Every structure is written in structure tokens, then in C-alpha cells.
Image (cartoon, rainbow, N blue to C red):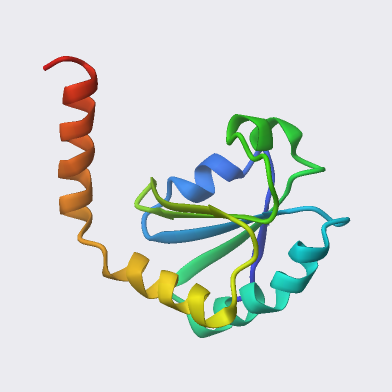
Length: 125
């Protein structure tokens, strides 16, 4: 599957959908973003079961600010609407493949349980 572009209008519906979504927050002027782009595109072709989305931070400043993106590229991964990974900086192909494998292998029931426990602790329950 080729990459898709997300905007302020489509970001939320894309990342909250079922399945795995990996977002590359980038900008046209960013050298490391341009260097990472072929790695991201190749991974999108090798993992048709994952949605690969590109977020242009310059064209979508509100969602970029809401996500508190302070360095680009920033990679974010969502599974079933839950952010499970976030890292700033370009990644070598082998490391990116490893991250994709780890995201796919997550036990989402366990992730949801851990989130529920964290929320309960924060709310003093």
C-alpha cells in the first residue's frame, strides 16, 4: 500500500481507525525528512496490512501543535486508536522494520489493561 497524506481534517479519523497506522510528521524543507522518505515508502509497500500516513507539519499547523511536535521527522504509531510509539528523528531501515514488528506483536488487550491501570492511578482510584 502506498502512503497516504493526512490533514487536519483527516488525521483523527485515520489514527482512530481499527488496525495499525504509522504517521510520519515531516516538512518539505527538512533534510532528514527527505532522507527518511524512501525508507517509509518502502515499508508501506512491504506491510500492506498497515496504514502509512504522512503529515506535513507546515500545511497542518494546528494538528502539529496539538501533537506537540517539536522536532521532525517524528514517527508515531497507533493501534486501534491508541498511540503505542513515538520517536523524533529519522530511523535506519532495519530499526524501522524492527519497530514495525514490535508494534504488530503488541498484545492490545494488555496495552488497554495497562492504560486503564494508569488512568486509575492518575485519578486516585
